Length: 274
Length: 172
Image (tube, rainbow over the protein chains, first blue to last red):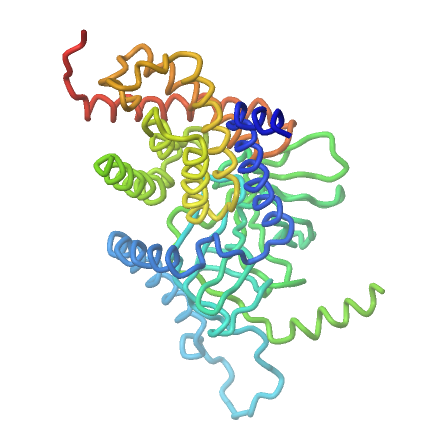
């Protein structure tokens, strides 16, 4: 017993190393496999409010660009108004429209923490469960798709951005309508993604890639444009490279997509796959 | 003793702030990211007990993790760094010298020793950190180039900070 104690005190550095190393690896592995909301992340009170203050300050630095992008979006939306269409039928009667039922609503949120240079990137936004955000909702911005809500607390939410090694989205070629899956390969940089298509699809250079409408997002929200038709050779699928339309480094405001029929759809699909 | 604690507390706060609000946003082609905050562990006094050294490294790692959203990753790398520090100091510094050489800074230990010290510790920290983050052998070439390039930038920053706070001292 005494010898054991002497042995341990003599090599105490090694045993201390074992204790601390194992505990930190446990934290690391546990968080990664379950995505549990532990207290050590950017949602908690201290880090969350610090990030909020810094982003408050940083917001002033890019006011001009934000104004421009909002003005562009306004112009685009204004173009969709009924008043901006020329009415070519002379007779017009008013119909109480029951054909359309609102399926998607959008919640605006501000980005308070953002990373683009890790191999798994997350975005923290300043809206949470109290504002109606739940896990697995889609997130977009004016320029295109941003990601998917990974975790949510009362006042904050963490978004798994497109730039995440495990993010995968259903995407579609705008002209060809062929559906494939969008991924991000971490060795590529924050401007490029990868789209895997069936071999019979006919992608063209410069063709826009948009959301398919199968899952989180409405149809037609852009991912980006095809920049390279032969990104990765030799696989079973056709891999094309996409230049992303969202500049993740300059992200300030995003919209969380609330799909009112999401539960109904996933419930139905779950029954079928049993 | 009290002065050492105050200085190290300030150093801890300043380095963590610099890392998470400034250096986190720096990345050249996703290859070079300096992890300058490890300077805190490098500059802890020689006489620090091993328990405290490991606990402080663990705490520093967790603090940085909280801002990077990667619980445990930086903590694991910092604990490895603490072990390498103990081994390196055991091999290269005599125990009797601790009285007049309290801290392993550039001005006290000289450029040659400090450069080797910073280089070896930084390389081991970055190697462990970046490989644990990616955790795949298929990307090993890319990861190793990230390790080397990031280490160069970190050591560069460490040496510059050493020169900034250089205190001229009579050497016997």
